Length: 188
Length: 128
Image (cartoon, rainbow over the protein chains, first blue to last red):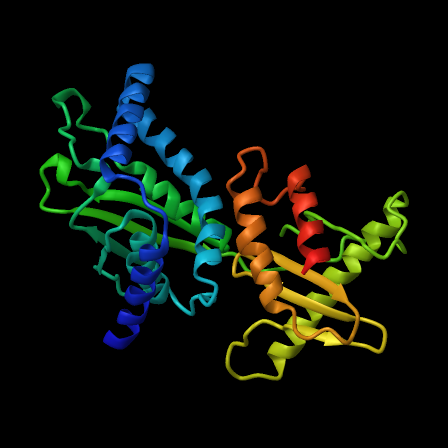
């Protein structure tokens, strides 16, 4: 088990080392400015959450190609715990430079949580009182949803805890709804 | 499920692309062939199988590179060519990802109309 884990983590490290990088501050500030603009435009935290999720979804659909281009040996995962490991240890490291921890697998292996100890998106952020409903990093949920959607997995992804709201860590919950089976039907 | 042909190129000049029905049925045949090959090769194996890579006849060889997302890259060559999996991987990594995935004018899973992509793929396949 631990050996398996280290393979993904190592792979993630390797790819991260090769990736071209931008300053984390630049990303944090740009993202911050962007979210701020969204809040100004819509004036509704829940709407902003939805927009961020949708944006993330579109990013995820493309990012998954990038993921497989950089990690060509990665095949389809056998089960959800495998998926969780690849996301937490490999994908998060590759694209965000941090790793997530996996926790709270539920009984029938249909959902799990990703715990983020550090979140480069939210580096300089303090959530103002009037925006307590905002999930600031909701774009990440969208990315996970989009990427898994391309792999025929329909999932629900949402933030359960966020450091910005005073919780002790950020927790992203991933729930598997269904795996769409490849089907091929004659159309004649 | 999505079975669109996103992109095709022909260097032999034997296919009449103006007859869209022909091209369409050809694409469908190739898809069906790969589908059956995959399920057939899987049937003979107890463990989940790595993807099917190529088969050859006396006249041609067909190479397949399939990604976990279901995207398939197919190359038909002369039978003497060695396995082209690496080539197709390179094509995906060096051309598809930068020119299609990162191109905001190309929607995922829809036909690729990017001119640069066509040019680069032609260049890539002819020169290497």
